Length: 80
Image 1 (cartoon, rainbow, N blue to C red):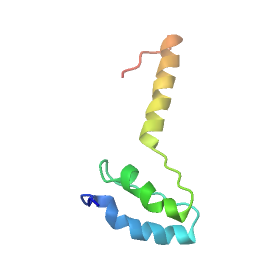
Image 2: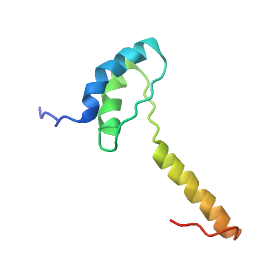
Image 3: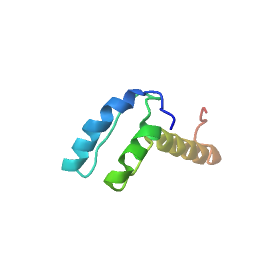
Image 4: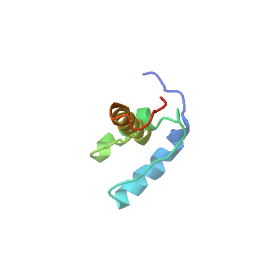
């Protein structure tokens, strides 16, 4: 079995498990590339249901649609 290179989020996995034993949800904030998407869900899947939100992606998608509507209605130009 191959060992994965350590990532910054690895040190947060144990405290995150402890927090989820007491609370239904937890918010993990870390820098890009810390391993939030690739390490946390697989580490927690045995604990129960895992829901992963990526606010930057959601915000960018919303901004795109808003700018598109504004452009269609000629309200103001949008920069991409």
